[in-house]
Image (cartoon, rainbow, N blue to C red; front, side):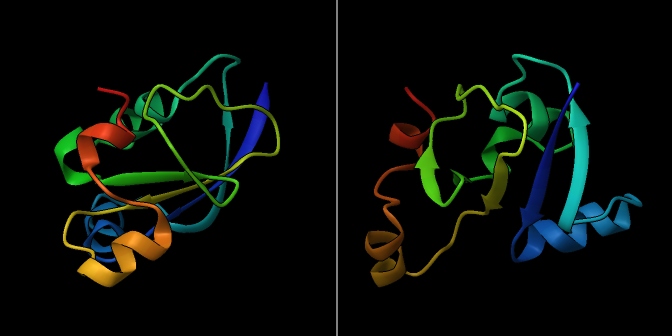
Length: 98
């Protein structure tokens, strides 16, 4: 088993907390080879609810395999324009590896 730490931002926090899940600085055990997409779906979120994922502070595709000690952050759609460029979010589909 591997352990990652996870954060959700904006309305994703409220959605997860309404489902009884922690959403900020929560550590969880994952199986080897699990991807960002696996975690998103495992949290009960739809991929369309997440515009970008960051693994260890860098934009990552949803197909990124996670490993022990990784930090995962999920950002919902609607991040204002200037911040999109600063954060490296240009096109949600591009970030999902499509």
